[in-house]
Every structure is written in structure tokens, then in C-alpha cells.
Image (cartoon, rainbow, N blue to C red):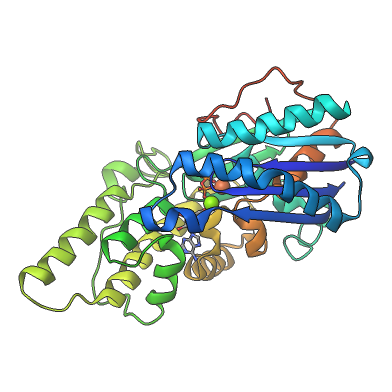
Length: 358
Ligand code: ATP
Ligand code: MG
Ligand code: FE
């Protein structure tokens, strides 16, 4: 099927077009620059930016793919989770398109779409051929709003959450720590870059929820064996900066960035690989905006190798928010014979990852 995907859950207006598992185009317009001076995404500004960007982004996508709106078989749209007002713009646009063209509409879970994008041909270096999922697939989703380890028995109707963050998401921690270190927004890329000049071993920051009372054992798992916590880490970084300042010393920003990044990446990868090993997962797909992080990619690769897990990592442009991932999941739903959502659904800002489509 030829599927048009629409994404507007945060600050990216995305329109992607796929045919089956082939990516035709992935057009993204971001309002990131408008949020920089506030140090974070301002929902009202993001919503207005979607309104401005949607039609031009749609037109550009159709042009690039060389298809007319009439050629499209179905429309897919992110219906959650995300910022309510931002989701509303994409959902309203998608409903209007569906009603005007008579094309069926699929309401898609943004988080599952971050995983589904890995099913596009070549998205993971051809490791997932023909859009067929490996049998024992897991997904490590690390983004601005979520940090989750999932078991994917079926991308269209069977997604199970094995573990997740109990407080901040990893991307959120990067953004908060970057602000604390005066590195601006978005913090992820800034810390990633600066960390390369720092010594990660100069300071040791805590790894959340790794104590025995939380971990338990394989036989008797503790309450948070596969869960993460990043709010304590953020506080530890703040204390560390204060201590340098109180002593009147220069704050070793690069070392702190490197040590913070090592703490985040170490605990994410160790728990994810543990969850895979203990749940028979043999293939792991990495997704979400933080999957752009160079150290996360490196350490996940090393630890998966050591554990005999095959790692699939989509290219950067498909890891951050985009419309192609929405179209890719919509296409999977259609190929699985699942019916459309109609136009009566409402966006759900806290849609759980277990609800693949509405
Ligand atoms: P969600 O998908 O949970 O709704 P989101 O869509 O806002 O959240 P994404 O757009 O997938 O999140 O990812 C954005 C996050 O990724 C930001 O927090 C940003 O700092 C982080 N990020 C981007 N590049 C990097 C990097 N190189 N290293 C670390 N973090 C990064
Ligand atoms: Mg974003
Ligand atoms: Fe996202």
C-alpha cells in the first residue's frame, strides 16, 4: 500500500510516504529554533508552528515522492503520546484529508512508530529483510519523553513493556543537565559533542535503581529490575557543579558531561541487555531521538555483541521524530489486514505503548 504518514506530537512537523516497506520520502520541518531561547519546547509555539508548516510539508513530500494525493491508499497519523495541542493539529489535518479524499485513516502510536520505522527496507542495513520482524524482537526506545525496553511479538498488536523509567526520560535528563551546564537546548547533541573532550572517569555519578533491593535476582526479580531512574543523577550533577563553584574552582564542564553521559548510557545498556537475556530476546532494535547519541550506539553495540544479541539501529534521520515512521507502521497495519480507525478518535497525550493503533 501507498501510505502517507503525519507526525506532529512535539516540535517536528513530519510527512512521510512509504510504499509497502519502501521509503519514498521523509519531509520534516522543525520548530526547534523557536524554542531555543526558552530552553525547552513551548507547547503553544509548537502547535502554531505545526499549523504553519503542515501544508508546505505535505506539498513538499508529495512532490519529492512524485505522487498525487489521489494515488495514496491510506493516511496514518500520530494520535499519541505527545503534546495535546501539537497532536491536535496533525490529527485535525489528517481527518480533514481523510474526509476530503475518502482515504482510510489510521491513528498510530508514536512510540511504536519509533520501532516500526526499523521495518523499512534498508532502515537497519537490510538486517530486517522485507519488513519481516525477527521472532524474538525487543526494542529499546530512548527519547525525549520515554525510556522503555519492549518486547515486540507483533508490531501491529502485541507490544509488551518489560521496563521503563520511573521518573525522567533519558533525553529529558540530557536536556536538564545541559541547561545546568549552560550548554543550551537541545541538550543531547551538545553533551554528546562536549563529552568527547572530557574524561568520563573523572567523576562517578550514580546509576539509578541498580541496588540489590531494586534488582533482585533472575529467579526473584526485585521491583525495578528492568527500570531506570534519572532524576537522582540530575541532582547529583547539580550538587557536583555547586561544589566546584563553592570552592571557587572552574567547573570541569567537559568531564561532567562525559561522566554524566557514561552514567546514563551504562545503566541504559546494562539493564536493556539484561532484560533481553532473561526474556529470550535475540534481536534488539534501537529507536527514539537519543538513539542519535554516539556513546549509546557504541556501548549498546558492544554489550549486544558480547551477549550474542543482534542489534538493529536505523539511520539518524529515522530515529528522531518524522512522518516516515508513522507511514511505516500504518503500512504494517494495512498489510496485517487491520481496519482503519475512522475519524471519531481523539488524540491521547498519554497513549500507552501497548496500544499500537486506536
Ligand atoms: P517521545 O518520542 O518520547 O514523545 P520526543 O519525540 O520529544 O519524545 P525525540 O524527538 O525522539 O523525543 O528525541 C528528542 C530527544 O533526543 C531530546 O531530549 C534530545 O536532547 C535527545 N537527543 C538528540 N540527539 C541526541 C544525542 N546525540 N545524544 C543524546 N540525546 C540526544
Ligand atoms: Mg523532537
Ligand atoms: Fe519521538
